[in-house]
Image (cartoon, rainbow, N blue to C red; front, top):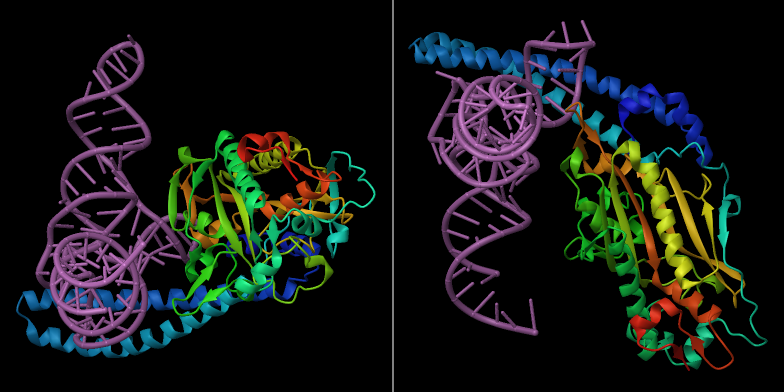
Amino acid sequence: MLQVPFIRENKDDVIARLAKRNIDATEMLDEVIALDEERRAIQTNLDNIKAESNSISKEIGNLFKSGEVDKANALKEKTGVLKENTKSLEQELNEKIDALSELLYKIPNVPNEIVPAGNTDEDNEEVYREGDVPTLFEGALPHWELAKKYDIIDFELGNKITGAGFPVYKGKGARLQRALISYFLDKNTAAGYTEVQVPHLVNEASGFGTGQLPDKEGQMYHVTADNLYLIPTAEVPATNIFRDTLLNESDLPIGLTGYTPCFRREAGSYGAHVRGLNRLHQFDKVEILRVEHPDNSYNALDGMVDHVKDILKELKLPYRILRLCGGDLGFTSALTYDFEVFSTAQDRWLEISSVSNFETFQANRLKLRFKNSDGKNELCHTLNGSSLALPRVLAGILENYQTENSIKIPDVLVPYTGFDMIS
RNA sequence: GGAGAAAUGGCAGAGUGGUCGAAUGCGGCAGUCUUGAAAACUGUUGAGGGUCACACCUCCGGGGGUUCGAAUCCCUCUUUCUCCGCCA
């Protein structure tokens, strides 16, 4: 959520930058500023009336003490009108605040200057590429065929137990998945991230804090009996660790990493692109998250990108990095780098990580602040990224490491799997 | 699930109708002392709104109510603790 003073002082710049998202925010921003002015006017009015009743109350107290009961009772009469006014003004005030909040929830984060303009993923800007795409032998298979051939992932079984998009990993497939989780967590903790295990269901306040609510409600599974949401990413519970928190400047930076399953309804996305592991309702992910001093957040973002690069290099997977264009940028993000691994057998790129700087957008909702060197409370910057999303890494490994009659295991994973080949 | 107790500033912990935004301690910050540090001492130190700056307003778990006036009384919700029951 953007801050009203920021909007007020940088209106033109905000409009220009939101234009990269193909949004003309002029009207919305004008309304925000107008509503805020109205709100302040009502507030001032209300405050004055309250100040008057406060002083009358004090006087009544004093009169009672000195035994002047008649005078005190006479004063009581005076407060009736004030009370009426207070009530109606309070109602007006709340209406303004609600209208203002509702509007603010609809305005996405302001893209960073270097975000390219554009509408779709085709306008994303490739900023890095590493690894040669292997030339596969004749008859190489896509990962869902490989999964079946070696009996390591059973999609049909998941259909029976739950439904489409909930695969069952078996034998070496399950072990490889567990190996990846351990490997990722080890890499992250070695880089200074503190490992956490967080709840997989969150309440409304948490969903709101990270921006999934109210506008992406339909994308999360909702447990209505208890009004809880299954997490779509560890970002939600992990970032909400810091909701309503005032940090010392010396506490920064903070880095956390956590493994969780992720649940996504993915309503409406069906077809060839969701085959196999490409798009699931439940998948595993290891997340990294940072809380940073505003001055350092873009450094930190670069550091996170380098960290993910390092992991992919060790896995020896061909990948590229995209700087997302305005149209493809997430609602809460100011700058996002997507990592895509090349799925050789499908001849397409698969997103396996998304690393973002949210600047103060989440922190403002979360009320996550630190006391700066001037003693003022200032919003922190939050960042997060996947390191990494499991299914598509698995797909990449299966497809790129396949031979005629086996799948090799990347060297770095062998200590974790205990085997170097699936056959 | 049943019975009871509790929720106060960064933390701990007083405060049961008016002078309480709130004692005290710890922590933080500044200073004295010291070559430096520690200790000790002195001062200072909650958040949000509002203002050029003051004034002023709001906030004692959330919401509602009683009252001229609520941290304090009432209702309700949430959470925590103790006991009982159930249970991985």
